[in-house]
Image 1 (cartoon, helix red, strand yellow):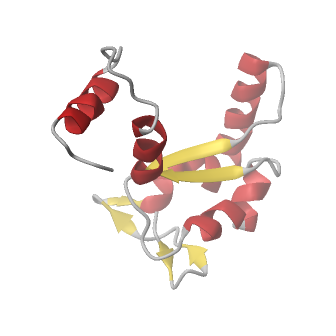
Image 2: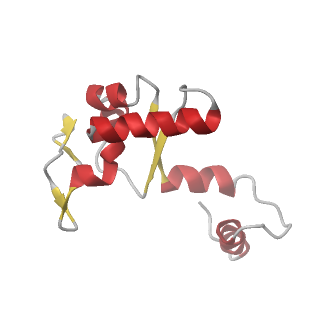
Length: 120
């Protein structure tokens, strides 16, 4: 779901032939948000959590719009919402790489990038 004019996320925009809100039902639909929060509580024993969405890249400066959108915060019972970008993930992992073979394909790929001289 993209934000229109950086004011609020659009719910009726079409993405891949579907309404964008279908990709984030737990934020846009009360039935789904209640089920989501209940599932988190059932699995963790607490209803305090941070809802995190990983995205490829930000369009303009939409992070705060998503993280502070009142209807989304209400759907998550005022728990924090966090948007993280691929760049943020890469920088965090890349800085901690060692020469020991990584245990994941992602980590190993980053090690190969580093060995090839690619810098993030």
